[in-house]
Image (cartoon, rainbow over all chains, first blue to last red; front, side, top):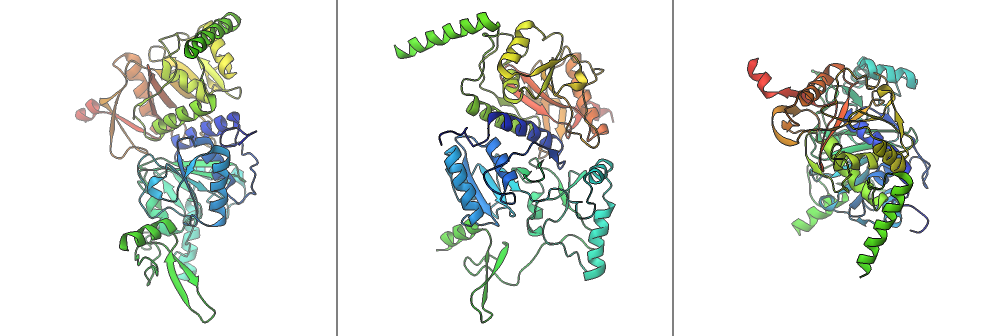
Length: 277
Length: 224
């Protein structure tokens, strides 16, 4: 694309983000402030993730973009087209073929491999924000490892509902130190954060924070001995591919109460149907 | 013929720049956007999987002391927003000029204000007060770029922690400086999240050990 640097961002900005990324990797789970730039899309559309992807993407990389697991939703399609235009990179929908995967709110069902980089779009990076509105205070809480209040929040769920009712953006502890918001992925995906061979990077554009989980890092979901962490389960299998172990979306099919459950990860579902057929 | 002509012109340009800046022998990246991206991905790979060895394709600088890999890191990460501290044994007017010419980085005499520090295993002094970051902003620490004696994935230093599935051996050399470097890295655990992140270079080879890594010596273990 004429008039733009490769991958849209200027080299100075990329270097700034790259330096911040190295610190993020060196201190897993710690939110590194960075000079977030205005991107040609509104906040909430993944400007943080886009800036990280732009800073790491190379001409030889194959890019995959998903939104809630799907390759064909508006957010995924527009970001994929953005990078096709400004970087001219090859894109794919196949999880296994991708070098860089930018994701909104899901981790692919297909296990990631070493060398892949997963870039998360993060709306609110601070897991303590809804408990403590002051940035100064939450920063101090992270410094002092003062995370009791997070357990109180989970306990309040148990007191009120009899179980931990947090189902997405479920807080995790990274390498036994920092409590981190894994972005609004369903808690179903939390176990995939632990010991994953791929590098996971998180970018929050509006809040101008980025953080990382290096490969093979211990990531625990917060819980209690008598209320251990559990993931969602369904009584149904996917109506399209028959999978009984993937994250399912409920789709309303008519106004008579008809509904079906299908895999949220479209690539996984399609490749399974290909194998079955 | 075109090729030879181009080479000759490049050489003339290099000589002319040499006359003007004295830094011509210190090569830059021929395709800054793509070269720095490629190098950064290797540095990111090294940092996210501590102890793994990367070989960087970088034009070789005239001074052996620093090495191609670390010069590549400098070209990839430094710019006018960064402060660089240079150890006495690496310091030279040519390096200073090359650094300013290619990156625009500010050179500082105060290690505590440095974003990056260039040194060798011989000039490493554990007493140098590099920035460790604070508990609230641990990212505001100096990243050390250290030229070491050798780089190999053999004992006696064992690395574990984030980025390492089980353990990984890393050997940077036998000198007192190399031992002091590994001891300093082992001490990172006690001050975490404050600490020093190090990028090691040996010729074109590169490895990194961030503060999150646990460093133990295999021979020390046997004593216990």
